[in-house]
Structure formats: structure tokens, C-alpha cells
Length: 97
Image (cartoon, rainbow, N blue to C red; front, side):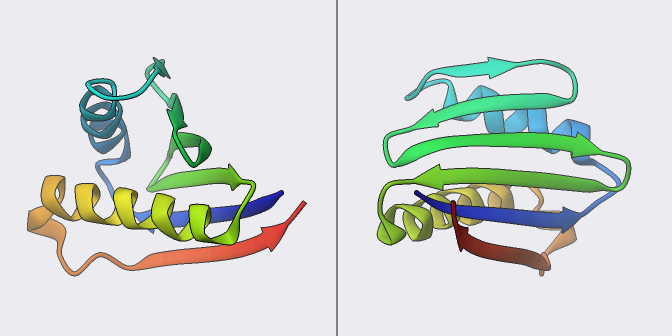
């Protein structure tokens, strides 16, 4: 299993969590609370967490290209929703479990 953990520093983590998860819910299954979203992407599951000052992504996929696709979807959507904050500094740590 391939993994990724991403972090974006932002003062609007809860807002972006809600926007991302509600948008993703139009196409995939999403379980959402005030501080956490579980997104069932086709390439694998991703947990998005709104922390104090940061939005954190933890994803898994059976293939490394699934991780890259997941990161691409997250980046393209968050860049659109957080356009006032662009350029966004994404910090990703990929690995294997």
C-alpha cells in the first residue's frame, strides 16, 4: 500500500475542509464532520483533517500513480477554493505501508 501525508498551512482549514468534502461528495462517498472528512476516491481513501492552522491530508492507494492522481485532485480543487491564498505551499510525504 502506498501512502501520502500532505499539509497546507492555513487559517481557514475548517472552511476549506467543508468546501472540499461537499464538492467531492457530488462524485464519491464522503463522511464529514466539523473537523474531519473521509473521502472515498476511486484511487483510494483519503482523510482530510482541519487542525489549528493547517489542513492535513492522509491518503492511501494500491499504486503509486494513484497517490499522484489523488494529490493532483486535491491540489487542483484547493487551489480553486483558496485562490486568495495562492500560491499554496503543499508539503507532501509519500511512503509505503
